[in-house]
Length: 226
Ligand code: UTP
Image 1 (cartoon, protein in one colour):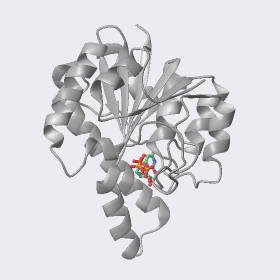
Image 2 (cartoon, protein in one colour; image 1 turned 180 degrees about the horizontal axis):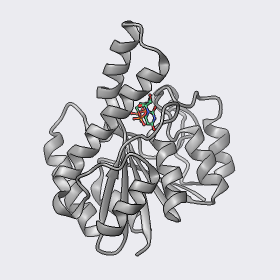
Image 3 (cartoon, rainbow, N blue to C red; image 1 turned 120 degrees about the vertical axis):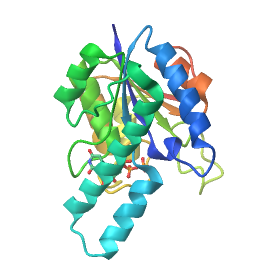
Image 4 (cartoon, rainbow, N blue to C red; image 1 turned 90 degrees about the vertical axis):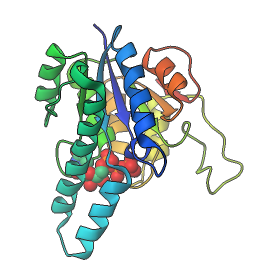
Protein backbone atom coordinates (compact mmCIF):
# COMPACT_ATOMS: atom_id res chain seq x y z
CA UNK A 1 0.00 0.00 0.00
CA UNK A 2 1.33 3.42 -0.99
CA UNK A 3 2.50 5.38 2.08
CA UNK A 4 1.62 9.01 2.76
CA UNK A 5 3.35 11.03 5.49
CA UNK A 6 1.51 13.72 7.45
CA UNK A 7 3.38 16.41 9.37
CA UNK A 8 0.76 17.51 11.89
CA UNK A 9 1.67 20.84 13.48
CA UNK A 10 1.41 20.95 17.25
CA UNK A 11 -0.57 24.17 16.89
CA UNK A 12 -3.20 22.24 14.90
CA UNK A 13 -3.49 19.42 17.41
CA UNK A 14 -3.50 21.51 20.60
CA UNK A 15 -5.34 24.84 20.63
CA UNK A 16 -7.40 26.66 23.23
CA UNK A 17 -10.56 25.20 21.71
CA UNK A 18 -12.24 21.79 21.80
CA UNK A 19 -9.30 19.63 20.84
CA UNK A 20 -10.96 16.34 21.82
CA UNK A 21 -13.70 16.81 19.21
CA UNK A 22 -11.09 17.69 16.59
CA UNK A 23 -8.83 14.76 17.49
CA UNK A 24 -11.80 12.36 17.27
CA UNK A 25 -12.82 13.67 13.83
CA UNK A 26 -9.22 13.69 12.63
CA UNK A 27 -8.73 10.07 13.76
CA UNK A 28 -11.90 8.96 11.98
CA UNK A 29 -10.70 10.60 8.77
CA UNK A 30 -7.18 9.10 9.08
CA UNK A 31 -8.66 5.62 9.57
CA UNK A 32 -10.70 6.10 6.38
CA UNK A 33 -7.63 7.27 4.45
CA UNK A 34 -5.68 4.27 5.81
CA UNK A 35 -8.02 1.95 3.90
CA UNK A 36 -6.26 3.00 0.70
CA UNK A 37 -2.90 4.35 1.96
CA UNK A 38 -0.47 3.56 4.73
CA UNK A 39 -0.67 6.66 6.94
CA UNK A 40 2.43 7.81 8.82
CA UNK A 41 1.93 10.85 11.05
CA UNK A 42 4.57 13.02 12.74
CA UNK A 43 3.11 15.25 15.46
CA UNK A 44 4.62 18.60 16.45
CA UNK A 45 4.91 20.07 19.93
CA UNK A 46 2.97 23.33 19.56
CA UNK A 47 2.52 25.74 22.44
CA UNK A 48 3.03 23.06 25.10
CA UNK A 49 6.55 22.45 23.75
CA UNK A 50 7.18 26.19 23.57
CA UNK A 51 6.04 26.55 27.18
CA UNK A 52 8.55 23.94 28.40
CA UNK A 53 11.33 25.26 26.20
CA UNK A 54 10.79 28.83 27.40
CA UNK A 55 10.63 27.84 31.08
CA UNK A 56 13.64 25.51 30.91
CA UNK A 57 15.66 28.15 29.02
CA UNK A 58 14.97 30.65 31.82
CA UNK A 59 16.12 28.00 34.28
CA UNK A 60 19.42 27.79 32.40
CA UNK A 61 19.06 24.52 30.44
CA UNK A 62 21.39 24.00 27.46
CA UNK A 63 19.95 24.04 23.92
CA UNK A 64 20.14 20.26 23.50
CA UNK A 65 18.23 19.77 26.76
CA UNK A 66 15.58 22.19 25.46
CA UNK A 67 15.35 20.08 22.30
CA UNK A 68 14.95 16.91 24.37
CA UNK A 69 12.08 18.56 26.22
CA UNK A 70 10.53 19.57 22.90
CA UNK A 71 10.87 16.00 21.62
CA UNK A 72 9.20 14.66 24.77
CA UNK A 73 6.17 16.89 24.11
CA UNK A 74 5.96 15.85 20.44
CA UNK A 75 5.88 12.22 21.61
CA UNK A 76 3.20 13.04 24.18
CA UNK A 77 1.09 14.52 21.39
CA UNK A 78 1.76 11.39 19.33
CA UNK A 79 0.44 9.25 22.19
CA UNK A 80 -2.72 11.32 22.42
CA UNK A 81 -3.45 10.88 18.72
CA UNK A 82 -2.54 7.18 18.83
CA UNK A 83 -5.00 6.75 21.71
CA UNK A 84 -7.79 8.28 19.63
CA UNK A 85 -6.88 6.03 16.68
CA UNK A 86 -7.20 2.91 18.81
CA UNK A 87 -5.92 -0.45 17.59
CA UNK A 88 -5.43 0.78 14.00
CA UNK A 89 -2.37 2.61 15.31
CA UNK A 90 0.72 1.37 17.05
CA UNK A 91 0.33 2.42 20.71
CA UNK A 92 4.10 2.22 21.17
CA UNK A 93 5.44 5.47 19.76
CA UNK A 94 8.40 4.85 17.42
CA UNK A 95 11.51 6.76 18.50
CA UNK A 96 13.36 6.54 15.19
CA UNK A 97 12.74 5.95 11.47
CA UNK A 98 13.43 2.21 11.54
CA UNK A 99 10.96 1.70 14.36
CA UNK A 100 8.37 3.72 12.43
CA UNK A 101 8.81 1.70 9.24
CA UNK A 102 8.68 -1.52 11.21
CA UNK A 103 5.48 -0.41 13.03
CA UNK A 104 3.96 0.37 9.62
CA UNK A 105 4.39 -3.29 8.74
CA UNK A 106 1.83 -4.28 11.36
CA UNK A 107 -0.42 -1.20 11.65
CA UNK A 108 -2.34 0.84 9.12
CA UNK A 109 -1.51 4.10 10.92
CA UNK A 110 1.75 5.00 12.67
CA UNK A 111 2.17 8.13 14.80
CA UNK A 112 5.51 9.42 16.01
CA UNK A 113 7.09 12.64 17.30
CA UNK A 114 10.63 13.97 17.08
CA UNK A 115 13.79 11.87 16.84
CA UNK A 116 16.94 13.90 17.53
CA UNK A 117 18.02 17.34 18.84
CA UNK A 118 18.58 20.22 16.44
CA UNK A 119 15.71 19.59 14.03
CA UNK A 120 11.92 19.93 14.00
CA UNK A 121 9.13 17.50 13.21
CA UNK A 122 8.80 18.96 9.66
CA UNK A 123 12.33 17.72 8.97
CA UNK A 124 11.50 14.40 10.65
CA UNK A 125 8.45 14.00 8.41
CA UNK A 126 10.48 14.65 5.25
CA UNK A 127 13.15 12.13 6.26
CA UNK A 128 10.46 9.62 7.22
CA UNK A 129 8.92 10.07 3.75
CA UNK A 130 12.34 9.28 2.23
CA UNK A 131 12.81 6.24 4.45
CA UNK A 132 9.32 4.88 3.85
CA UNK A 133 9.48 5.58 0.10
CA UNK A 134 6.51 7.98 0.24
CA UNK A 135 6.03 10.20 -2.81
CA UNK A 136 3.65 12.52 -0.96
CA UNK A 137 4.14 14.51 2.23
CA UNK A 138 1.31 16.62 3.64
CA UNK A 139 2.03 19.47 6.02
CA UNK A 140 -1.07 20.22 8.08
CA UNK A 141 -0.46 23.57 9.67
CA UNK A 142 -2.23 26.62 11.10
CA UNK A 143 -2.08 28.57 7.82
CA UNK A 144 -3.69 27.57 4.54
CA UNK A 145 -0.59 27.48 2.37
CA UNK A 146 2.64 29.26 1.47
CA UNK A 147 2.37 33.01 0.88
CA UNK A 148 4.50 35.50 -1.02
CA UNK A 149 5.15 37.22 2.35
CA UNK A 150 3.82 36.91 5.91
CA UNK A 151 0.02 37.44 5.57
CA UNK A 152 -0.20 38.56 9.22
CA UNK A 153 2.14 41.45 8.52
CA UNK A 154 1.54 42.20 4.85
CA UNK A 155 -2.00 42.71 3.52
CA UNK A 156 -0.68 42.37 -0.06
CA UNK A 157 0.57 38.80 0.66
CA UNK A 158 -0.80 36.26 -1.83
CA UNK A 159 -1.18 32.52 -1.44
CA UNK A 160 0.97 30.52 -3.84
CA UNK A 161 -1.11 27.59 -5.20
CA UNK A 162 1.83 25.81 -6.80
CA UNK A 163 5.59 26.18 -6.55
CA UNK A 164 8.81 24.31 -7.19
CA UNK A 165 10.93 22.76 -4.43
CA UNK A 166 13.63 25.24 -5.33
CA UNK A 167 11.25 28.17 -4.80
CA UNK A 168 10.17 26.81 -1.39
CA UNK A 169 13.78 26.34 -0.30
CA UNK A 170 14.42 29.99 -1.28
CA UNK A 171 11.24 31.19 0.45
CA UNK A 172 12.10 29.61 3.81
CA UNK A 173 15.87 30.20 3.60
CA UNK A 174 17.26 32.34 6.35
CA UNK A 175 14.77 31.14 8.94
CA UNK A 176 16.68 29.31 11.66
CA UNK A 177 16.37 25.51 11.51
CA UNK A 178 15.57 23.99 14.87
CA UNK A 179 14.46 26.53 17.38
CA UNK A 180 10.74 26.72 16.74
CA UNK A 181 9.76 29.78 14.71
CA UNK A 182 6.47 29.85 12.82
CA UNK A 183 7.66 29.05 9.29
CA UNK A 184 5.36 27.43 6.72
CA UNK A 185 7.76 24.49 6.41
CA UNK A 186 11.10 23.99 8.08
CA UNK A 187 14.11 24.74 5.78
CA UNK A 188 15.79 21.38 6.49
CA UNK A 189 12.57 19.53 5.67
CA UNK A 190 12.18 21.60 2.48
CA UNK A 191 15.68 20.57 1.34
CA UNK A 192 15.04 16.90 2.11
CA UNK A 193 11.79 16.98 0.10
CA UNK A 194 13.69 18.66 -2.75
CA UNK A 195 16.56 16.17 -2.88
CA UNK A 196 14.18 13.20 -3.05
CA UNK A 197 11.57 14.94 -5.19
CA UNK A 198 8.77 14.30 -2.69
CA UNK A 199 5.60 16.27 -3.44
CA UNK A 200 4.70 18.49 -0.50
CA UNK A 201 1.12 19.61 0.09
CA UNK A 202 0.68 22.50 2.55
CA UNK A 203 -2.84 22.72 4.00
CA UNK A 204 -4.84 24.13 6.88
CA UNK A 205 -4.93 21.21 9.32
CA UNK A 206 -8.25 22.19 10.85
CA UNK A 207 -10.17 21.81 7.56
CA UNK A 208 -10.54 18.05 7.63
CA UNK A 209 -12.31 17.50 4.29
CA UNK A 210 -9.61 19.47 2.55
CA UNK A 211 -6.87 17.65 4.50
CA UNK A 212 -8.39 14.31 3.48
CA UNK A 213 -8.28 15.35 -0.21
CA UNK A 214 -4.61 16.30 0.14
CA UNK A 215 -3.76 12.95 1.81
CA UNK A 216 -5.50 11.07 -0.99
CA UNK A 217 -3.58 13.01 -3.64
CA UNK A 218 -6.76 14.75 -4.84
CA UNK A 219 -7.30 18.47 -5.54
CA UNK A 220 -7.16 20.59 -2.40
CA UNK A 221 -7.01 24.19 -1.28
CA UNK A 222 -3.48 25.14 -0.28
CA UNK A 223 0.00 24.97 -1.81
CA UNK A 224 1.50 22.12 -3.81
CA UNK A 225 5.28 21.97 -3.96
CA UNK A 226 6.65 19.72 -6.68
P1 UTP B 1 8.16 21.06 16.50
O1 UTP B 1 8.44 20.19 15.36
O2 UTP B 1 6.78 21.21 16.98
O3 UTP B 1 8.84 22.44 16.17
O4 UTP B 1 9.07 20.59 17.71
P2 UTP B 1 8.37 23.89 15.95
O5 UTP B 1 8.73 24.27 14.55
O6 UTP B 1 8.99 24.59 17.07
O7 UTP B 1 6.81 23.92 16.15
P3 UTP B 1 5.64 24.67 15.40
O8 UTP B 1 5.47 23.91 14.12
O9 UTP B 1 6.09 26.09 15.19
O10 UTP B 1 4.49 24.52 16.36
C1 UTP B 1 9.12 21.31 18.94
C2 UTP B 1 10.53 21.43 19.42
O11 UTP B 1 11.06 20.13 19.74
C3 UTP B 1 12.42 20.01 19.40
C4 UTP B 1 12.84 21.39 18.86
O12 UTP B 1 13.33 22.13 19.94
C5 UTP B 1 11.52 21.98 18.38
O13 UTP B 1 11.52 23.38 18.36
N1 UTP B 1 12.62 18.88 18.42
C6 UTP B 1 11.55 18.35 17.77
C7 UTP B 1 13.88 18.37 18.23
O14 UTP B 1 14.86 18.84 18.79
N2 UTP B 1 14.04 17.30 17.41
C8 UTP B 1 13.00 16.72 16.75
O15 UTP B 1 13.22 15.71 16.03
C9 UTP B 1 11.73 17.28 16.93
